[in-house]
Length: 230
Image 1 (cartoon, one colour):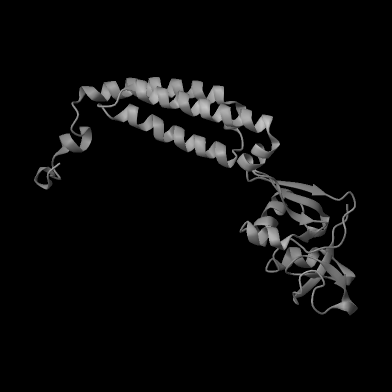
Image 2: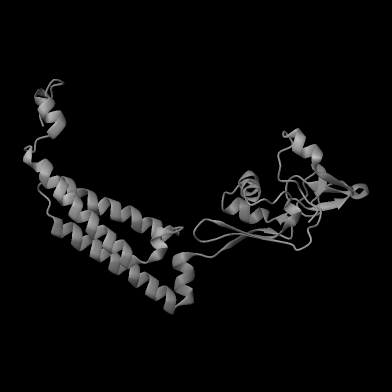
């Protein structure tokens, strides 16, 4: 389109573009057909596509969105091309899932593996650093699941879908509080251990008289370890 053809009072072009008004009805029909076909494709992809998505499943969803937009909107593009691309995406996804089922090595390469972020009430700092996950993200997940101390956590994994799985001790041990120290009311209400301090960096606990650099991470900032009664 030439710059001279662009006019702010050209409401016909602004509302309908360069296509005739009748194309609006055709667009409605195209959208309905592509929507129904897309629902069918997602149904064939499996129930996982409507749950928590892994990285590859999220990629498939983005590809589906890109595929269906063009046949619905452009008068020069037919529906058959978009439907064919949807079928190709379905075949690719099903094929990758089949190879993952047949080969554990391929599944590991394709899907990745769960990552342990907390072990026995202590942060796995190398994994946090490698996966760019902050302590506050972990604390937020623990608070949402009603866990009030890092010492309660036996294992915390980040699954391949990006969600967190939390497994707690049957009998929790003293540990780092997940509440921010700025929340003075909750902080003061928590029971503190008489002899243990928790490392602010990794959550490792040591006796008061032994306080210097953390034996686990060499960090030197400490806070009172809290006890959560069960």
